[in-house]
Image (cartoon, rainbow, N blue to C red; front, side, top):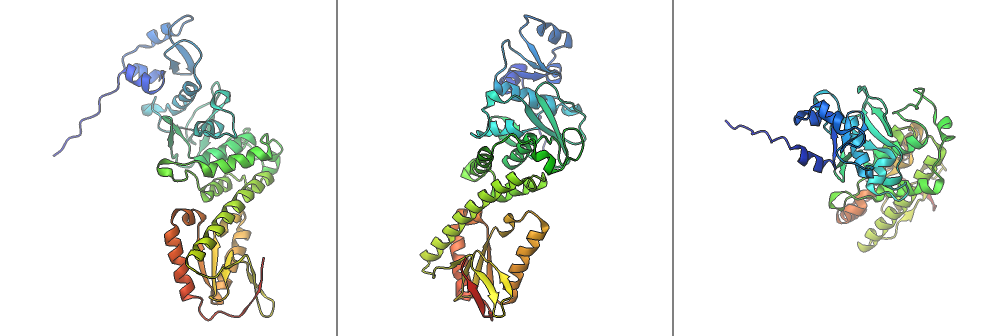
Length: 361
């Protein structure tokens, strides 16, 4: 039988060094510091200061931007037995984007409010510059400079929600379920900055050089937050996705050329001989009856749009066209595998393809 020896509790000095001198009341109490001593140290002219309820800075002078982030996170993470831990709370919104290094948002010293994401059942109020946002979804953390932050896609959605004046999942700051049309009137982010935020979201890299946020993840978060119904956000995302798709399609054409495959048609309109519309695939090889669709559903906001795209794909397959479905991220990450898939599809070709009329896009 094996026994697991519990890790020793870090000393006050070690914990202070780890948390940049920001400590909670429960952490002090667990290390034998009585409340009386804390109160004495936080008096005017004392060596400590109170930043937020039950959160203290063990030094004099103004807190640094990073210390303000630590204070916000530790304040929101206090919940019963886990008091003082960083579990159960994430920095999100503009503060998280500043930590990620987004150039389109104010730098960390200029961030005047810290949005913190907590489980919906938590009883916690806004305090100081800390704004509490609740969610029923599971919290997934990404560590940035030692701080627990929401993933990039979620942080972007929360920042846009914040700029629109909507502070909870699916709601508004007043607790009413204001529609996107009402919220759109309160947008303070210009179109150029909005496009920049979305571009940076898919450009941020995680460990290993992989994208920290894919266009699909970003689209899913914006759809979950009902932000794609806001015209300027939808327009900015469409522009981003169009650029990503154009890059991916160019990469596919280059991979096909490297395999000495004929150049495919780009965005042709396929119709049957009687004129009945079939579909508009991204790429099409008429000599082989092979079509390529790249991230087709990312363009769709409504279920109606998704149904229309799927219907076109089903019509192509029904008429014998071989449809290859690819993701732009896979084209960039696995070019050799994508090349082999295209080669095999072209060699196999479609089966009993109905004669189709082509109109090049």
